[in-house]
Amino acid sequence: MAKRIVNLTVNGRVREDAVAEHTLLLDYLREQLGLTGTKKGCDGGECGACTVLVDGKPQLSCLTLACRCEGRDVQTIEAQAQAGRLSALQTAFHEKLGTQCGFCTPGMIMAAQALLLRQPDPSEDEIREALSGNICRCTGYVKIIEAVQAAAAVLAHAAGEPA
Image (cartoon, rainbow, N blue to C red):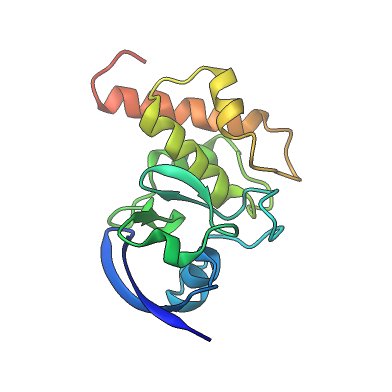
């Protein structure tokens, strides 16, 4: 099994690791780095549970080779909380009951984070579109959308913008 050295940044930490060329980003994160917040769902890019951010954009880690992330910035759900405090999205998902079993939640939050990075005040349609690649088997998505709207309002308030 051929390995190569991959240089990338994961959750703000510069990494240099030997990675088998066929290793999926999902497996690299979970097995090599111990970042188990990224979930293995369908293994085929259909459910979105494995969504991470690569250079600020949502990426399905079950379809991405770790080697293809050379020189890139990867963020997982573990990067959301800072200094032991939940992020605005994590807090909103908790307070607005946007989670049920919680399996899809990391992928949903990462997809929502990507949306809020590019569109701080998204419409409901924009939220639905951004989350369209993420399947939740437990909710009707209403609480998830409310959570993203609540997080957007909190972030806008923190930035001094009208909510």
